Amino acid sequence: MTRPRPVIAIDGPAGAGKSTVAQQLAKRLGFVLVDTGALYRGLALIARERGVPWTDGPALGELASKLDLRFESVPDAAPRLLAADRDLSSDIRTPEISMGASDVSKHPEVRDALLELQRQLGRDGGVVLEGRDIGTVVFPDAEAKVFLTASADVRAQRRVHDLQSRGIPADFGQTLAEIQARDAQDSGRSVAPLKAAPDAIVLDTTNLDIAAVVDELARLALGKRA
Image (cartoon, rainbow, N blue to C red):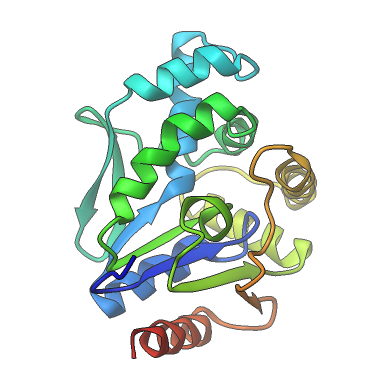
């Protein structure tokens, strides 16, 4: 398949900088940004509210297939995730829902239900998708693939700073433990485990600032387009 503009797939563990990098890269290139992890978070949140256990794959898959999830662009900010007309953007960014997203994403029924939606959002290219299986499952034919990583300590520090900046109390030790647990769960699941695609460029952001990472990804994307 030849797309007029590339699909840029950004994968990696929690706290590696995917969301910030993807947002700034999409803005620089004039591409659409799709935060696929937000879709799983949204499902986890609504499932909890409706009393659907995060362990019930068939029920979660049925719920996911009926949800009207979409993104709404916001100038100079990350897109908002909407369920019908409800803005979920703030409610899905808690540590509990983060782990819930990992729980619900283990189920084949859930991944099947959300896979087609993700592919529709990026079908025509000119899009930056960030998540945990974009380059391996959602868009294995993406023109540009990158896997961002960083040390667990640095990722925990970033997550604490992010939570505290939004007025959410956060403890470094607890956050580090949660990130390590999320890593183990995401990497060890049988369905679409977290891993770098064989043809992805791996970038360790431990000692890199966001601007340097965005510069590198922009060069990669423009090189693929040429």
